Amino acid sequence: MGAVSFLNSVPLVWGMLHGPQVDLVDLTFSIPSVCAEQLEAGQIDIGLVPVAEIARQGLEIVPGVGITARGPVRSILLFSKVPWREIRTLYADASSRTSVQLARVILRERFGVEPEIRRHAPALGAMMDRADAALIIGDPALAIDPKAQPYRWLDLADEWFRFTALPFVFAAWAGKPGIATGALAAITEGSWHFGRERIAEIVDREYERRSVSREAAQQYLTRHIRFELGPDEYRGLDRFLALAHLPEIAIGTEA
Image 1 (cartoon, rainbow, N blue to C red):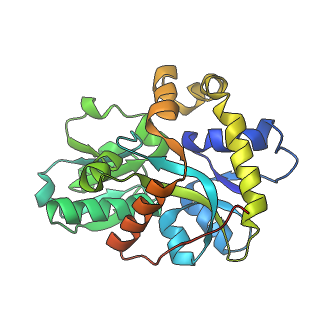
Image 2 (tube, helix red, strand yellow):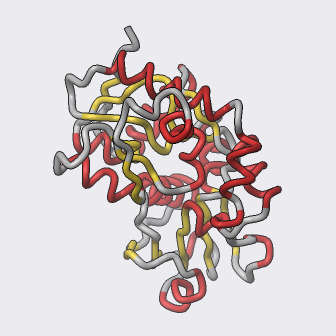
């Protein structure tokens, strides 16, 4: 199984690292886009994959848990040095293709612009020197205080919720069609339940090495990120896929 190396995935894999699921999986870590590439290449069987890649590859979701938000998420930040409707170039941290697609959707639907998007390492100053806007995600975004920057900024998950009144699903456990979703859901949900009861321990062990404060990590994992996939999350997912012109995604069953 391939997991994401960002802080937001740690509660989901805590049982696989330290709990009852530790002997059930061989776990590797990478950024979301690489996790998707490893799954496509057959290097892993199951991955915590950005939903845009799940759609592109025709993968099947393991139901139950994933990476979601209902309102501000704090780790998907869009900055601009020009008015939103004047953005023509956007440099994006392409660690997650879902976040890039979300930026496209928000800029098009909310502000009527479709900028040229180029990849760039997540360095805000260098990105803004070369483009009108910058997208930074994951742990690098958590390390930035957006209010302290001299740019306009948006939390894209918050913009999505304001626009649709639906949660946004960033990533889910997925594999090629025909995977044993019921057995896998028992592992992934069990690992999350183990982690959910140990958030304080996770924060204490993770915050410093991620260059964020203990308070920021605590708020992120308890207020910003959500982990359970339910009917509202699947409706939000369907809406995003339609707006991003991506194929529908198959959801496995837990039985």
